[in-house]
Image (cartoon, rainbow, N blue to C red):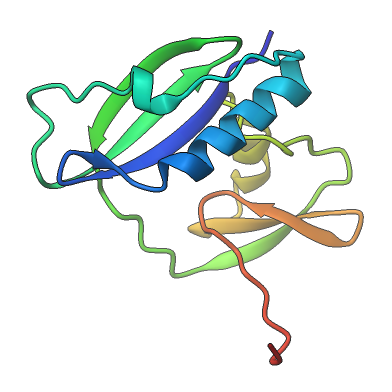
Amino acid sequence: MCLSLESVRIRNRRAENIERHNDRMNSSRRKLFGYTNVVDLRDVLKMPPDVTDAVFKCRIIYQEAVQRIEFLPYSPCIVKTSRLARDDTAEYEYKYLDKSCIERLREGSGTDDILIVKQNRITDASFAKVIFFDGTL
């Protein structure tokens, strides 16, 4: 069974947007694995002593339950170039630990990031968060 991933920004030893991360993780657990019990990340995230007031990336790897938690110093990736990568069979609706699908599409692109196009729609990116704006509110 595949492992899923949730990444949480830690700043000043506090997890940011924890409710949204709880919602996304529990929604994925329900849709991918059929689990209906709710996991609250506030109960499982324990800050290790080496996490300082700096910014960290917390990687939560899970299936039914949390399998592993990693705290990594945050290192921003500056995206300067991006290209479209078309693949109508790409399956990355949820955040999986196995990113081989994305890496395969990004391989040889010569860019920092790719925008994944599936059935003529941009569905994801290999790194960046993508927001579209039509010029009106």
